Amino acid sequence: MLPGDDLKTTLHFGLFTNDNLIGVCSFFKNSNPNVPSTNQYQLRGMAILKTYQGQGFGKVILSHGEKFLGKKSIKIIWCNAREVAVPFYQNNNYMPIGNAFNIKDIGLHYVMYKIL
Ligand SMILES: CC(C)(COP(=O)(O)OP(=O)(O)OC[C@H]1O[C@@H](n2cnc3c(N)ncnc32)[C@H](O)[C@@H]1OP(=O)(O)O)[C@@H](O)C(=O)NCCC(=O)NCCS
Image (tube, rainbow, N blue to C red):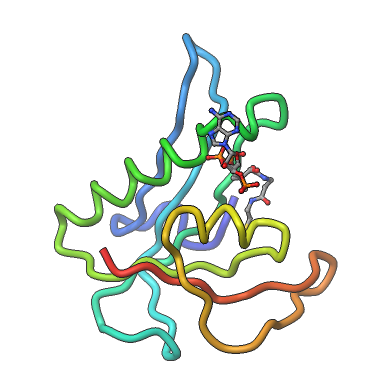
């Protein structure tokens, strides 16, 4: 659960195999002043169930969300990427911007963004 989950501007996606939810990602209308362009959305809650990781499912759900937002004329998606997830976002053409920063109890993060 994240603040803003129920806003009309927020989008939630789920990836299912049969009736099992195996992956989620959400997009929030939220701007980061360090990221270029005004029409931004923030990606949050990007996760694939552990036993399904590393099989391309993260790419599937993320690219589905990106296409959906692109059709709504969103120009930029950005996220606070955990250090361990940086290669995943790079594989999906997200670029880091600025210095690493710490989020308490989670660890080092980088702001990463993608122009749609
Ligand atoms: C980060 C996360 C969402 C990525 O999802 P995923 O489904 O594992 O991602 P993908 O499978 O699309 O890509 C991940 C890796 O699998 C590889 N891969 C893609 N398709 C593959 C396949 N068919 N077979 C084997 N490996 C594959 C990719 O090359 C990639 O490798 P690399 O990033 O080590 O270079 C997932 O690992 C996760 O939920 N982690 C825990 C939560 C988390 O950290 N979320 C991010 C918070 S910022």
